[in-house]
Image (cartoon, rainbow, N blue to C red; front, top):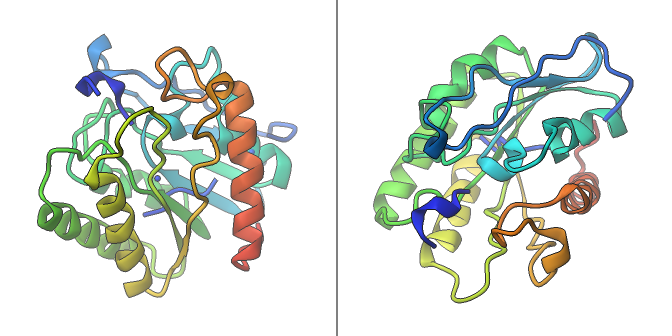
Length: 232
């Protein structure tokens, strides 16, 4: 997500553990003029490998330490290796701080050799037509599946925590990802809007979660993943 407009193949699945080899990347906003140089990798070298693809919420934008973002917390809680490819301001169409859209992250996702890829839809494609969002989302998820045919692809809905009317693209992005994931026999998980109406769980921009907000996201995501039959 990006609040800097003026106003989530999943690959969003996304918690912390004793760290094995850990790589660190700071989520940058495009306004800062620099891209994210590498993914954040948390967890043990061996065992289940999870890749998460999504926007600035997943990237941990605004946190002092991205190890407190929900993907890293997932790694600790479930003792899995998580490669967080969250890209601030990125989307299925929008080019983010990482220098690409979500499709451009597939090479890094493949290099992590994941058994599960969590892709989360995003509001960063606001202003794009429904048809464009549908086409780009479908193409990205198909390419992800082709690159990682044995990986389980999990989709997750767009988060929208801001006050006021919800743009139509929020529902469109969620629906497009749901269709795309199911088309490749993946699993779509709708976690609802667990932070909506909870200002204390959001940073001053009323959009990006605090550490406490990321912990709430973690609990919700883990619960809903397990309810969907996905066990890390």
